[in-house]
Image 1 (cartoon, rainbow, N blue to C red):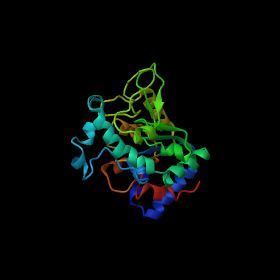
Image 2: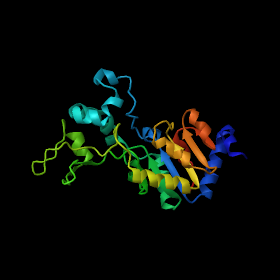
Image 3: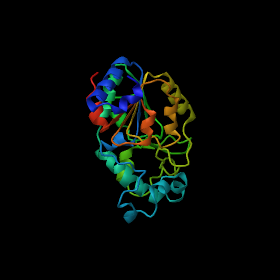
Image 4: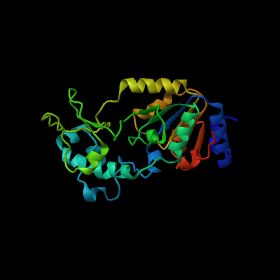
Amino acid sequence: MEHRAGRDLPMDEKTATLQQWVNESNSIVFFSGPGVSEESGIPDFRRAGEDHFEKYQYPPETILTRTFFERKPEEFFQYYRERMLEPLTKAEPNATHNKLAELHAAGKLRRIITSNMDELHQEAGCRNVFEIYGSMMRTPCPKSECERRITVYDVFTHPGIPYCDVDMCGAVMTPEIHLYGDGLDKELMTQAVFDILMCDLLIVAGTSLTDYPAAALVYYYWKKKMVLLNEKDHPSDTRADLVIHAPVSEIMGQILI
């Protein structure tokens, strides 16, 4: 079978092909996007919902910039708590996260590369996770000489701007997340490229592959087993050898290890 014809197979044959590729693989890279977290109840906060402008003066792409954080920290933290942290407090790993933990335990999973910042992969039991955009679970003091850190619970439950209280430091505690205008970790991205070059199966799930530069990572995959799992059709489907349109957790939950 020509792999790129895989998008025309019936659903059961597509799932069987994915199962076969998982069985044959010992170095899987799983690239997870917002769609994976959405199935745990965490919305894509980069998109403005229908009620966004009823409550916030600025669009998400403005609020989630380093400049906005520095100039209007109180408004930033209001959005951060309400749109990002509140869903996180209720979220639990879904079937995708749990299946990846099984693959990890079986020694088949080389790496998870994720644009999500919720640490649900780690909560499910995975340890080989690259967080391209950081984590909402970590909030350190930005001053290098200060080792103060607070929990996501501290940020969520205390209104206003969280300040560092160590020795009259007074700096604004800064979530360890990537904001628009920030550069990505070059060392991490180099390792991610290496992992994609070396893997024998690349599964891309819950992302439309339009968020650059992270989306450019898939171009480094040169073999014939790239799988794209998404609920809807997308132009990026043409990049994959096997395309399955269904909820990611529904498909991953069927895979046997």
